[in-house]
Length: 245
Image (cartoon, rainbow, N blue to C red):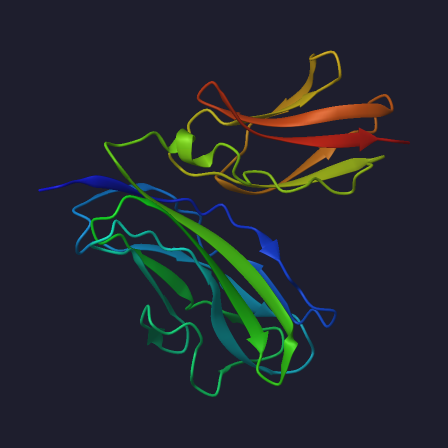
């Protein structure tokens, strides 16, 4: 039976919050793992929490705005999502009146699902969560699912991915905050702060696969630095930062 590895690359990209800013996203779990599947019945799943950070209840709908599935001419990959109900690949927006999320509450039952259907390749999915009564008030989350034959290394899939978000504040004077998202398959991950000569100034080993690292930069001379995420001898991502006191 034909086998591939399905990789959920939960390398998310938060974007699209409106001026009202009623919603905030967070990961339920960061589980981009390699799943050995026959590509027929197995489904890869990723999750995200949706929090209403406003002071009023929100009737909230979910919409799949991007769905770049791959076809081999005979079969086509599929995605579907679960919100107030589970919606088939043919439905891109939740059709009910909306999920009521109370002020300050978090909806934890959303999931997006990927069915390879024997087709190798990567699918990008973007989900939008919006106020039914004000569609300009929304937030988005992007997901990437990859099905590859022959057990291709997960590093080949996440290079150039968003393993580190842009550090903030930037320029930094006292502390520097860095959000990161790493697949569990990556071992020996480390974040390095490197000066313009290539010398490692500071290093930090992430305590998990996703989260926020806080760096003290008060003792660093002003100037340009690079922050590098490494794993298994590979550079997985870089960010440019400026220290200015």
